[in-house]
Length: 222
Image 1 (tube, helix red, strand yellow):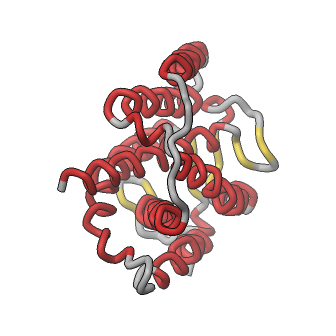
Image 2 (cartoon, rainbow, N blue to C red):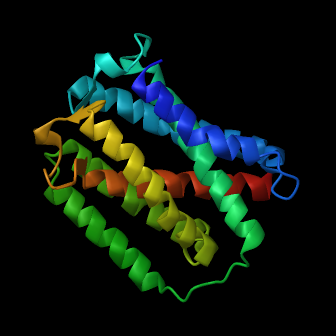
Image 3 (cartoon, helix red, strand yellow):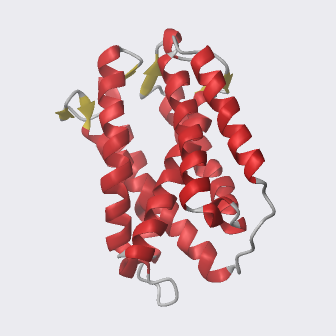
């Protein structure tokens, strides 16, 4: 078993086990989870394939399986299945046990933040990872503000986003320190938190936010 495969198992092990707990019953929402990852994870995987082909990042064969899908190790594909499962499970659990509250966040602040992210992205247009993740964050803010204002103002949403940074930091530390994933200096700012490129924090925010957006969208409409 590769190190990356083991990380995937650890990411999803406890959320999956507690999915059948009689209060949480997350298994009843698997349909919406699958619909969400069919949209979001597919998009991120396509980008991942392209970025890997560009050489923006690479995967250490010593810590991944030999199975490759369009150049990505199998574990990288599984990452886009296990991480959203655990993140959405945490979201549902928080919503079950903690009454939500709408926060007072101005639309000007949301659109202003999106504009700053977009401007910064184009300033660093030659750094592909930096450019892309900042645009993804801006895109999420605009989409959510137009189509699902309540999500951006949900206290539970922000609690979940904050909580996910704890496992994110642990997982990404191992991924980048072993290393399992290596980044090209030309694709990033170069600023790191321990061994984690600062862009990964934006990446995590955008990805988890899109998963939660589409999960809520499908749950409401299907």
